[in-house]
Length: 216
Image (cartoon, rainbow, N blue to C red):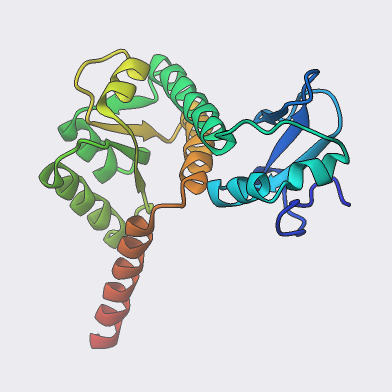
């Protein structure tokens, strides 16, 4: 089997589309998020569904050709590791000046095209999200970048990572530190099943643009 073949789907993929697992000294299956642990590894498509399926169907034992112990909530374990990785990088980006906080500053960063992505706390009000979403749509209409938004973390998680209090809205800026955050946020979002609302928003913007062109 190819090194980067998912043990569930049997499909080959790039490393960023997969999560690597190794077997620890106690024969326990260990997620290798950074892909740097020693030993022979196996790969699973990087979402919760496939990892839970690999555990349920005993595919780790088959892949390693050995009796292994799979943690009871290995899917939740991977989620926690991806979440901590994203929050840790978010904190570093804040120290590098690549994050702005607060609805007004986030909206400003979106409208002037500085924002790479937006983060809303899970507790964010519909009204607060709506105003920033309007700014994101307006930016696209004016020929600016499509700035995606994510609801992946609680207010407490964002506040702790960013060294603030009551952090509800944050924008990650288009800088090197911001790109590192984006990679980890996208990985966590994909793992949790994606953000269909954002995809629908971008599709709606495209439809509106097409309709406007048809009327010209």
